[in-house]
Picture 1 (tube, helix red, strand yellow):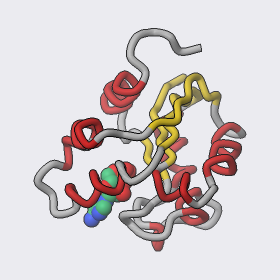
Picture 2 (cartoon, rainbow, N blue to C red; picture 1 turned 45 degrees about the horizontal axis):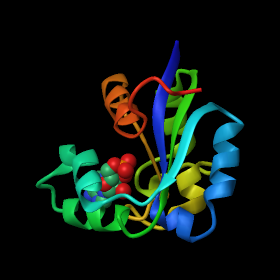
Picture 3 (cartoon, helix red, strand yellow; picture 1 turned 180 degrees about the vertical axis):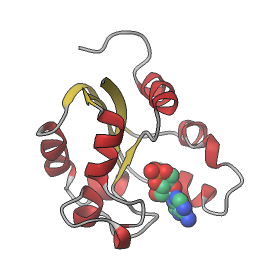
Picture 4 (tube, rainbow, N blue to C red; picture 1 turned 180 degrees about the horizontal axis):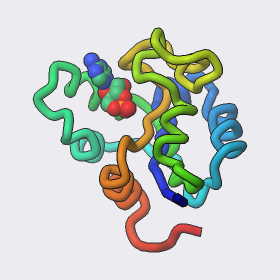
Length: 137
Ligand code: CMP
């Protein structure tokens, strides 16, 4: 089934100069239907990760996600949600499979280079968070 999902290249990967390589790899698997580079505000990061509010890592996560620019993309493809999560690899790079984005570019569970939506419901909310309206090309 054709799906859309949200991808974020996180501040650690942008800072390290890995955004281009990550985007090229993503583009070899999925169609990039929208893309923006932006600096998240504290309020935006807190809202985006509201599902994790109250967890021990939440405040550090919000600080990290606002520590520098990110690149957000809406990806499209067959089973794009699970497919992009496979390309990313496990949240913890120590557990990520060889060849995955996190194995290559993440340095820890907190600084894990990329984000991807985890289900159709969250994908719809997360895509609309950054790309409201229907201006996707
Ligand atoms: P992400 O896919 O962006 O979704 C939530 C993020 O919280 C996750 O990637 C990690 O970067 C971060 N995080 C930090 N610590 C943890 C943890 N103990 N469990 C899950 N996620 C964590």
